[in-house]
Length: 548
Image (tube, rainbow, N blue to C red; front, side):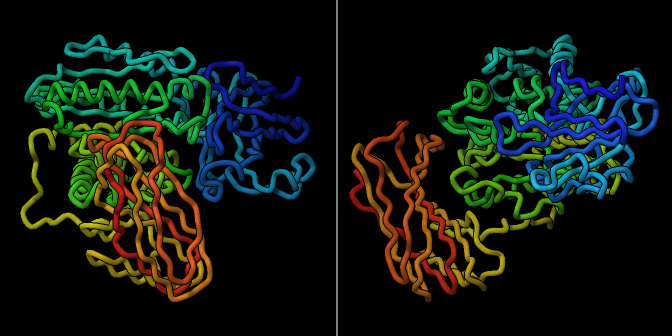
């Protein structure tokens, strides 16, 4: 009968399957669904003889972090057994010479291979330990039976599934408000395991947990993109908009609109209108080669103080994590806060809540799929322990834990002035900033700068214009994109006006506000990205005209 691959169960994810029985090999692709990149796969195998079957992921070049797949270690579960990792020594990248017989080398230039012992019964295989929609539902049902909890259905997803939030405690004046979300990218399964560990710890009989329940109302959404979870999607950059790029005053996604509405309502019940919640924590998974690390909000949008508060939150998590499950601030690199273009970075949930003053402590934690910072493979219990550490850190913040004497938080990796903030500049450049000028000297012809003018521009009913003088030591033309970000009551509306052009050797940058806008706004902020400028680039503080 031979080997067969099954994908007829909830959450399955595999396509373009080809079985080569003679070589006990199975070629498959991880589905992209409506995302530009993939990562997640999950399927069942029957018809093995107990020996190893080699699986070949043929579209590694389409996966997030394609170059890091040598660090990927999938999981499998024999029929009636427990999930466990495949042997890391049996994982490799690229095709062996014999694979040319069944992989088109021109179509699939990169592959990832691993071997799994498969018996005659069903063997389940996945990119990482699954946390299915049924598991989410069961966890919420279990938590909802405990005293002091409620399970809230905030909305229905695009496919009609319930989006649920666990409420621990009752929001009331004087209480702290805490929000935790996971699985905005549905294939990032470690987030649900960490959320489970966090909730179980908060609901425990430990003295610190009782203290937190007395001081705070806690809301946990263990799966935001429930359709992606149920349908086996990876989910990053899902059309029409990434869930974690939809945090704004007017979200496109019904799920984000409903969560935003409930967040605002609970925050105001606890602290009053215009007052931030205590903590907003978002749980994610990184590329296949990364360890676990915290991601503070982007300092160009949120400012130095918010970024430093995120550092303190991260250090509390780090201190409470056991060595067996580390999350270390040292593994949070400057590149991590620049993983989105300037038009998107302020739409990420942690940066949005920090930049709009909606949370005192706003943070993302990336939870490794594979190898931890201690060079051990991560397990669900490791992610649960990280969730428990986050819960203990939140309790410390709720009772007002302060920095130890003599400890000074680090400054953000971007220079922040009263007028200009870095969105991104080359690491190898020399930069000088004062109140009126930003001057950057690049080492090569591939310079790239993305700058944000920090002062908000009041808007009236009419259009506005602004101009900034620009000086360059070279005279060749280079691409320049001017950006206008719109806000209402200090909250980013999500609307960005992009105006594309070129710069000559000495010129002015001009911003022109649009005649009409999709959403009401009362202020704007200006940004600019400039590429391919050798030598020195200097930009003066913009001057605004015609603002009504």
